[in-house]
Length: 258
Image (spheres, rainbow, N blue to C red):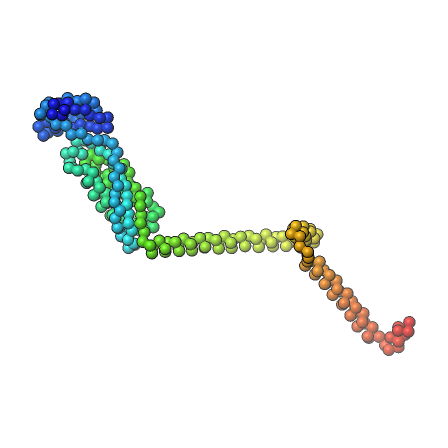
């Protein structure tokens, strides 16, 4: 049908008309007529194209070899330029995308590649957009989709993460101990000013222990009180015995006789 001068342009396409080898016009979607044997139409799709960027080995700025794969999204915005300015626009974008990814990642540190991927993606997109603009192509998005690390680097990063978690755990435990010590000091001051509070605390502990149904319950506070009372009694007895030893013999005899 194109040789007969009739062509159908789909909604997502544009038709570039060449008349005797020279660009004449761009046809919109619909049924279009041309001069037979004189006009030729090249259809250009304006839909977004998804183009994977194959994985490649890249050495980062801190001398770590990693494998990086990406994906790029682009579409043609100028049908004439995408035909006239370049022969195979998709192959050209694929090659320039691989080169740009290698250059941008190679100028970055490993930590930046792993944590700041948005900045790297934006840098790659801007470089590609400046290059492909002259071909009538707009780069919509570039994303790093796969980053492969060496096994030794993965083990080192795992040890680093484990050490970081242990450090956080120790810091939290130390903060808890400090807070607990402060609260215990405050509680000790309250109990020292109010002795009845100690007895109430003993009763509370007694209730908690009774739930476990233990056969023997020992309270250090009452035990220490009994020991102090016994010590005072012994001291008093020794005091009386010492005082009687200093009396004269006659008085002691009289005392015994009495």
